[in-house]
Image 1: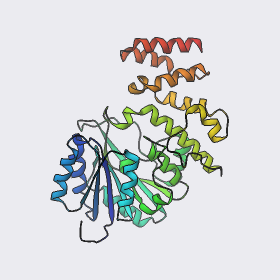
Image 2: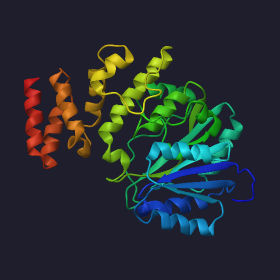
Image 3: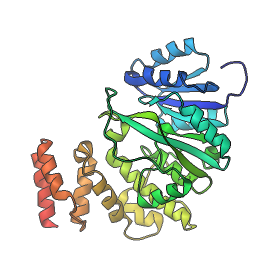
Image 4: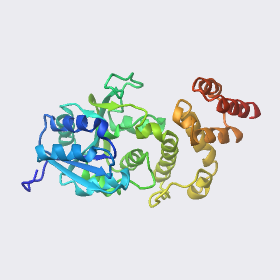
Length: 333
């Protein structure tokens, strides 16, 4: 779209080595029933064939604005896309998902009809890496703002990041995506936005969300859950009228430093408890830092709920040594 006219929507997609599913993701945007958009695709220094795929589609559709640069990471990419977007409404998209044809039309209409809402998501249809349906673990994300606030308190899912559409000025007003919250930058953003605008989800499955072993949420599950727990601490601090000590950080504090950072007591064990029980079913986390975190949590007196089943799971995963270490930690604690 090079005619100088401001589009209704800016679509923001960042990709890094995403050639496997990228074409399907792009095509799902280009075939939307709502057509008044620019499509920003930022290639974050990919080393695979992502750039060639982007260039091929950009040559065929003038709505695509390709951006190529050296790798700087997802958070930098998301903030750059926000800065470069020309439309007042931004639709997020990931390089491994598929937006259904009516997604933009439904979400844009909602924002037009509800000016007090700054963010709208939608329910998802889950699929695996082959496109086959994935069993749903939940009925859907919270539909109303009131339900959204309750979901925060309950620790329930809030929004599917690639399924959201939001008002650009509202997101920029809270500082965009914060650098410290790598792998959970979206959750931190939703928690900050909840205090300044209304947030909802359409009870329609308008995006197909893909699950596969190499996706970021699988590869960094423990680190993601640590960040999520700290984001919740920051949310509670803001809600209580206290300063948010994470606001200007480039990296999250170490877990053992949380009491000092937040000026409270017992936070390291609280965070370890949240994460320990959250990664029990993640094979990747049980093979990396998540396992050591569980051992530390138990050594400090953490509860055993679900832990013995994890011993059996580790044996099935082919990790008898880790199973023995966890069993010993359970006996000692």
